[in-house]
Figure (tube, rainbow, N blue to C red):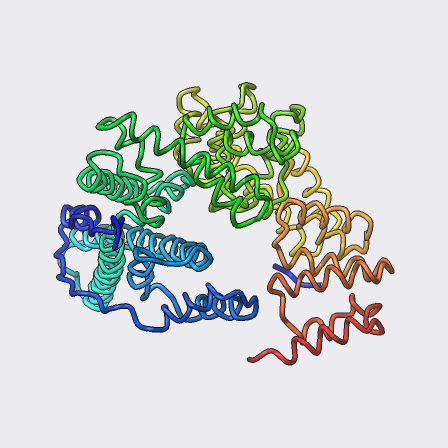
Length: 535
């Protein structure tokens, strides 16, 4: 048991966005230099990816993951802007988008770090000013405050430096960042004013650059695939100058997206669904028409694709969470509420996008309030704004506070040794706040300590249903199953715990709760595999 040569899409953007925002905050900017030419290893990876040999393509993908990191974004973007074979292009584009997302998140982290450090430095400066000159014997305390102020100023400068460096990379990439930024903005969950303004300014720069490069919709043959992909989320801003041309272009993109979905190949399906999300209302109309036509997909799956798009479900989200979002419109009210509640505890980076989709599409006002409340607890301003319009934001705030307070009190009972009282308190909280993975876990953990194994197994399984990636839940479920005599099921959960990140070989080997597993051959194999891992 354990506790817890064609038209290019990447002309550099104007030197605006973050740089102007930080300048407005009184920050000096630093110059930047040119980038190096793409080294030969990328071209070798491209050749391997085009090979008919599966092993060679697999080796190329491993090489891509291992050697092409954030420092190679511009090299990869330049390579994709030229002539690249179709097999290689798909893998290279996926990797570029992963890198761009990581780079964007790195800039966001630096911006929030800068904002926080600036605020802390300002507060400390105001405190020093209020206290005035030190009284007798207080020079040492004032010196410590001044040292702390200097440390916070250095932290602010370092955060600024990292934000500028990452933002320069995004500027040099140009329009290629558009799909990544589109989906990042849709994901929401951002409550930093400086970060919101950065996103808005960066998106405005992308739109202006796209209008400059494409005053009219380009001829299909003049557009490299990489450039065409980057333009899709920007078509809404471009169509006013050439509505017929851009609508025709978007219709072709949507036809391609639907063909990707119909292929049932996971990577192509994800690409198709991303394109459909970027296509906006025109994509929704196209999907509605498609759902009434014959298709290689069964009608239920067609309806599921329409539902995913309406709820703005990010590609792959349902595979990672096992939530029945494809059937959401067909679920009864209780099941829809359960889905909304579970969204608070899974995939926090993407769940706000789905909750915002439910908030927009759901007709039941009580369920809309439920979705908005979860959004608000995830610190997404869209939920708070909806609740504010209804005058309910205070109630949701109190609910969140009361849940935390009650949980702390119950866990305090457990720490003091009153296991039965703690379990009773946790069960009472769960009746008031159902669908909480943390509560299910704590109930199961208390029940395991009390050797109430049926109850423990039930609630560990519920916790895992809400958060399948929690290795501690899998590990402790393995302990409960082992004590219950369900050896094979316990081995499966132990393996899932190890896969999920629980790799404490010494603890596993010594845990008396796993005594019943020690004669199982897979138990020894798992310990041996952990022993072979590099330290």
